[in-house]
Length: 515
Ligand code: CA
Image (cartoon, rainbow, N blue to C red; front, side, top):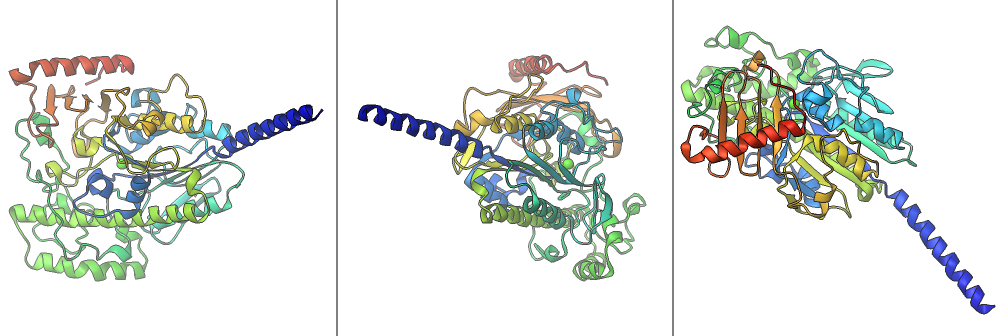
């Protein structure tokens, strides 16, 4: 009898243990906070070794989790990158090839819709930029198109309204308000997507004097002459030297007597949006600098250097606000007991040229705009201080989120879940190359259509619309200054990379290229 009672107690204890176990597993369905910016290059993030600024809060995520140093986009332009993130597919499969008026097809698979159906509460605030109303979100509050830095308009299902203040701060306020008001019983997905640091680089008033008394180091290729590579590079229209507007980009709101007609065509749209008080604070910072510039204007290379400093400082000031607001989100998670069970990611839709090759902007398959920052923390799943060299891509985000949530990843997804890399960050059981395809042609910046493949060592770019192949050895030539495609010593590598490109085209079912 005693024996039987003892057995019953054991069975009861086991039942309770199993019951508790599943309750714990359920409670551990992770929340996801995805902080996404626009045009934030890895060269300006501390965790990626920035030599020009500090980002202590983004670095907090990396320090507590992982930094992926070989993280790439599939198509280096705003809307298409976002479509790749949402769908886990390349542009030719999700149908969003380039920015423009055509709306993103939100009826197709996207990971927020699946998470919503799986019991997640889902929210999106800030930049959407897909010419459509978001689908798969219980709550959305977005900027129209590119949005504005100053006194931005937001659109929700209730209509649109203008909010006075600075966009990065307001976007974060809206995100934190939603976190506070959400149903605390459900896991959540929060996508907090900033306009910053996108052109036209209008910093927050309190950061206008950051970097005022320092010279930001110039990139080694600021005066690239585009020799030894495809002739198409020299036809670009995104150079710091020739393609900035004085008023619009460089914030010189005074007549520039030596400027060309083109250089004075566009006005600074952000200044036009400011309140009188905001304009006063802005002018207090910029007017003396602009007067000094015009009193003794530099010429030749010194003028390029001046433009670089004006551009990069405003870009970095925009990032100062981003970093500060990343810190606010992390603090909120800490203060509300959410840090342990929340995956936090910081990423940006693609990289950007911070003067490398003499450029601003993105689009090309060169490293600076091909790369996307990707730092992630997930306590208990990713060791603090992890660094991964694995070749990851924005098509991997959707399957990663589904996998982390315990939801099946549909067959049609082209990306791969990153979960295996969290425990084995430099696993040999991972893809050995990534496929890239940029589809816009010409336009404002004169970048042609091109595709390519990148391995850990080599990159092959196919300028199929107006030229041939360029091959780079990223180990010997990390700045990509010498095309090796015509060098007989590299004929075997060229052939192997061409085969790899063809293999990826078949793997991803890429249609025939249109010139
Ligand atoms: Ca972008």
